[in-house]
Length: 373
Image (cartoon, rainbow, N blue to C red; front, top):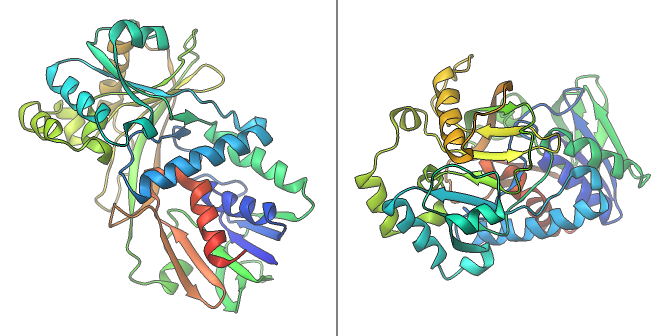
């Protein structure tokens, strides 16, 4: 079988991985010289802990297994089974963490409510003030800026993979066939359009009423911390954002403890992961209303800096990079991904939202299974 994958981000690359792993030939086409969208502009978190139960959690857990397996084959991914800690600072936040640790699926997520001293044993860099923490053993991390590069190198070694950058696919021209902006036609037994947040042009023509929206976020990265951050870190605002934390305790938190004004205005939470060079990737905000701003705002960065410094008990290293990114999210946010046949032999796979990096291996595996690869 010959598979054409349109899109060089992590979702597209994982579809290529699944096809090559199953013995097929793959041509992957990317409109940029390299993927430059949400697949690079993220935390690199394999984030199991906050996922909704049912399909979303099952997908995340399966993806976590696949990431670890692929990471063993491709060391350059920098797969690290680091887990996460969410420090809590008062009784209301503690109650939400306690409710999460009592969920029926808590063991599958690796939840454990730990004391301040236990949290510092797990992550000695947490020298700030907090009362306890929710430990989530199943969370992990990879290096987002280089993951696709290393995956492609491994795919090329198969002898059945071709990467074509700098080509924008413009139209479907037949059963399993697309034409790019060079005028070349790429014929396969199946075409997967994994175009991420690029939902205009050909995608809009194929699916005018696509049930997917675009979401913009801001993030930053620091100079090396100078010590190891042994886990990823979230704050209690993540309880408000992720569906796994829904409970009466969360309702009480929302009713009785307002977010800081800056966090509320920008729909914020803290997520933080250390990169292999020692720098910290920190975010994030959420913007849903179009048209998106063209610039980044400083208030969210200042707020995140304060939160991180309160947990670390030390000044944050110099901020070296700030950026905004856009991802595609199903308008029905309970759906893991939008997967649709849009023409003969052509399927569109988009809209995983903030789950893209976490769930991409399992999303691609499901596509491969459903298409009979």
